[in-house]
Length: 222
Picture (cartoon, helix red, strand yellow):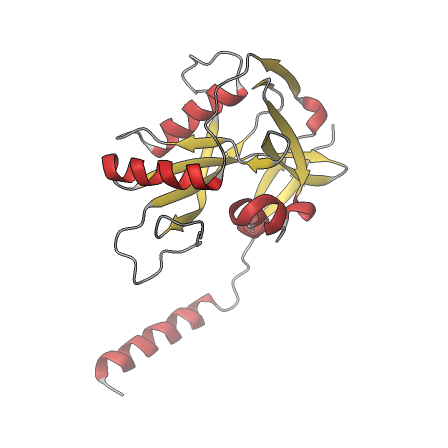
């Protein structure tokens, strides 16, 4: 074994030893009851075809014009029946998606997500987004090529991925109004129903419970 390899092993050993005896605590996350929130509707908005063929065609066109396509999506939780529920948008009574969407060229992750949340979940679409508390990035999914496959990591042989989707935790205040376009449904779905249910919700949504495993949920019931 070479000196560099030995030094690497020693560094790892020292790090493990230094971490022994420490108590690691999960991050506590307050989740408020669904009943604390008001849900209303506004005029329908135009949505592009969610057919996979058309979606991949748009990604290809976007890549040709702007390069890597970046999407930002929100993980928003509420409490119901003493269990965390994830807020999902349902399109045409079939497709489920997290609130969010594609960034504009040069737009930052946080500003883009706030813009999308304001557009789809707020009464005033011209708001400045200050009502949304966007916390840290929970995870990233990659589309290596113009195909359906998505990965929670960037494959080592891929030098020019075509799309990146970033998931951000969005913390809710004690109460607020959700105003949704009439052609969308905002649903609260239990995490236990979503977990590993790739067939119904797709790989990104079905993987959200795993991303939330580092949190300790504080269910506020009153």
